[in-house]
Image (cartoon, rainbow, N blue to C red; front, side, top):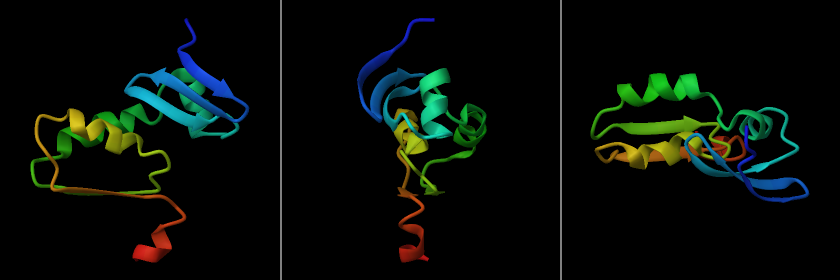
Length: 95
């Protein structure tokens, strides 16, 4: 399989993955490693979630990390009412 890494410098890399281009930390044990090795992260979750969304829905992605799910929503044939990605550092500020 051809490596689709566009840029890599120390702990930072950009790669063409299954759902587009993503920048990630190459030292990350879970998400970064999955993007690096497989070119995707939680694809089954995404495949289950996206068909459940309807026009006007409000989506809260708690633990958003690098907003993988948010990056897929613009490809939907309709607009979401609102999408609020919250990473683990922000969660205590909003709730």
